[in-house]
Image (tube, rainbow over all chains, first blue to last red; front, side):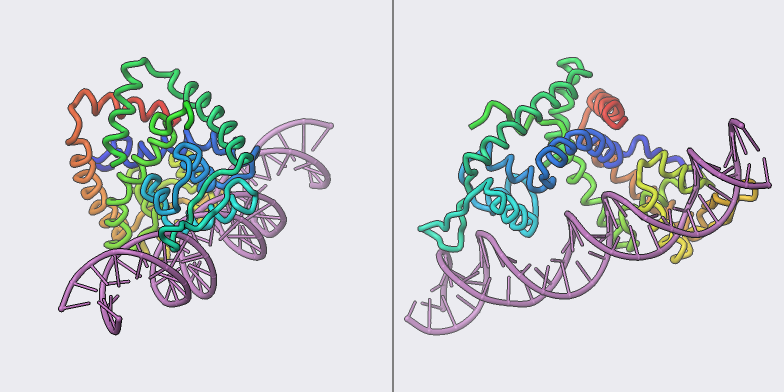
Length: 140
Length: 140
DNA sequence: CCTTGTTAGTTACAAAACCAACTATTACCA
DNA sequence: TGGTAATAGTTGGTTTTGTAACTAACAAGG
């Protein structure tokens, strides 16, 4: 009907692949840990980088600050993290995972790692490297 | 802090790339045409395949039927498509773009094609083929 | 036929995302 | 300094989405 084929449209392919590959993993943090996607992402960044502020997380994750604010509040409510105001700049809140938060992060990291391995298993090492390279390029 | 690196995590890379590559194009159908993402997708499938039912669109796009239902209603309200009940099966609604809908589809297709070309321009033909191949594999 | 199950699509209510305005604090600079 | 701008984070109101229940029509077996 048209000269343009959606199967070639990169944003479409990327979205499909992203949704597909995220859906199964989402069941883990959602169903098993009751976490929202944003909460999992925030938890993850905190786990990887240690103490940081909401703004830091925003810069790394590209999540909007309102999402982060709410995710942080939810994680705090579960006692997965604690907030302490910065002494240097009292606008800032330093965020750090609690021991319990670290345990959840480590469990989820292990899951993520295994899941990632299974995902990547369908590619040759060369394909895998090329894919990751291209995605990093596209991810800005 | 952990052995697992998020920069290697495929769902993460895919989501970043998908968001990044979709954001700029979204401005076109959103700001210039006032379409929602789902509406654009439904319009696109209808434009590509001609007359079809909501269920057909769901199978191709993997959008949930409630989203499709709402997008169809919105597109119909704008007179971009018309619905006619199937004679064979009166549960089904046959969806078809109006002339106006086709014009919008064609304009957006041209935009999409140009945008896609610019996106793909940063890759060699080999990289491009490999990327599309891998994404199709992941997209199910 | 007629009961039970399935499929197409819509709608209602709750959850989540989006956007804009807001408070509080710090930075800049005339 | 003192006033304006910028930054960190939160909150409120509106859209959009997600989940489940719903109506209507068809299918299949007794």
